[in-house]
Length: 299
Ligand SMILES: NC(=O)c1ccc[n+]([C@@H]2O[C@H](COP(=O)([O-])OP(=O)(O)OC[C@H]3O[C@@H](n4cnc5c(N)ncnc54)[C@H](OP(=O)(O)O)[C@@H]3O)[C@@H](O)[C@H]2O)c1
Image (cartoon, rainbow, N blue to C red; front, side):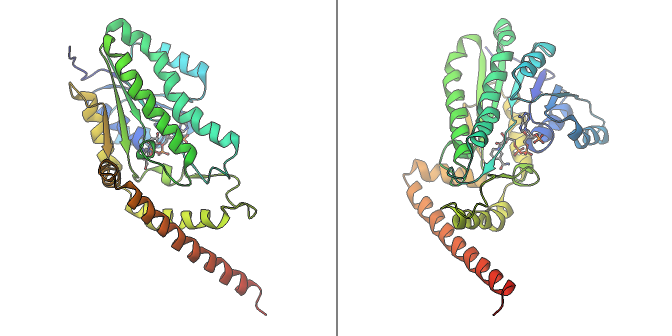
């Protein structure tokens, strides 16, 4: 059975910036009844202005996906929801040794449990109507390991595992579940929302120098080469509308290259290359720190 999703109600999480905000604008532009949620309404201005500029409307509402009561309330308030986009996510960069338990749990509470709990909350009305679509924004980091982002990578592996499992469970109810797996793209996650572990700058950490090397790679190599987020947004809109979406979509040049290498059994080569780059960057940062120290204490 296929259904027409145009002009239906879509609820999106994490719409204060990035993919979420851009998808909300695109969905409103396509005529969807768009419920754009965010955890901090004070950040709604950019979305409001963009909608106004384009003569579009969307409902903006508060939702912190780590707040179970808020999840239940929003699912009730906007039922029935035709399309749910679990987009909200956080990244806290740092070696797993430097990440506190609270930080690692915050990543999981947002990226994994937030999506699971909201899905559970909206699903009853989808089952009742025997239709619905759930789009989970995972990551390339959910398909392969990601040094200095172990908690994030693990949470996205968990989210992909969740999507893969419920894809089959929800088939009897004609509910389609799609996992979106982008590589690096220019959003606030690698900009204003970039978080680092509170112990990242602890000189006692065995990872102290390597963390600096990794940050150098992020700033000089990864971020400048990150993809255009509009490509991901266009694909999400496409997934909302296509009668038979694929189960998952790998998006971005970096993500495609890595998944092809994985399929061909060449992932070890790319990992070796990445490790070599980390060692070079670490040496470079160590030397820079030494020369800075010398300049401060010339004798
Ligand atoms: N950009 C990339 O390279 C990339 C690659 C792969 C996957 N992704 C995934 O794409 C999704 C969107 O991220 P983005 O790249 O668009 O980054 P972004 O601009 O930082 O957007 C993340 C959004 O999630 C929200 N959020 C964080 N914690 C939340 C919570 N507890 N409840 C509700 N909302 C919360 C943020 O709100 P605040 O503004 O209040 O923090 C923000 O609106 C994430 O799941 C991310 O993991 C991004």
